[in-house]
Length: 227
Image 1 (cartoon, rainbow, N blue to C red):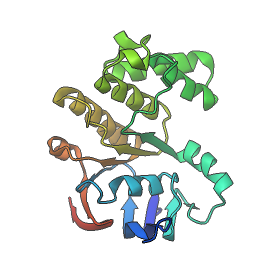
Image 2: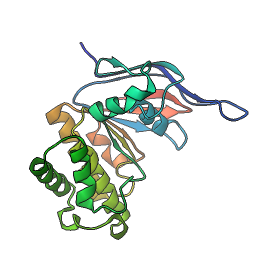
Image 3: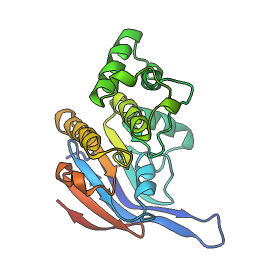
């Protein structure tokens, strides 16, 4: 059986300072189509670094990583942007919205960059904003949105990309329980109905029932798995 995401002995060590720091150590991980996997662990346990490795933002210093049949750990740096564009969507904890663009334009721009034509991109942008209950804020700039609203714009933009791997760093961290639940149910639906691989780094135990597996991280290692 083809495994969409397979990491073996995945390691990331930072050696810039006087003492090397290993943020992720010998992680073995298989991700399957149609599942939502939660990463739990204290701050500094390696959750965000692991997401960045899976999404080809960071290069591993050891081990192997295959995404949808491609050995990305061994690829030249110049090829990684195309891999990210084709396979990966990120939901960042810090939003990463363009401040001069409205909520609508932040989502629509991504679809334009992916080569989607104007009218389909327009319809999809409106649909994704509606899915996160932000249709009434589509024309607002990020400075005029609350933290929770900016998070939902970032989520709408990531999900609009329609990639097979979705990586979310604390996607409910800036949301109240009701909106956090909506977002997680949307991620769950994408996994179930469209076969997406979804990995969520979170501290939010309120959404555990929507996760297919829970991986507990500590000191850069996965120390326990729950199903």
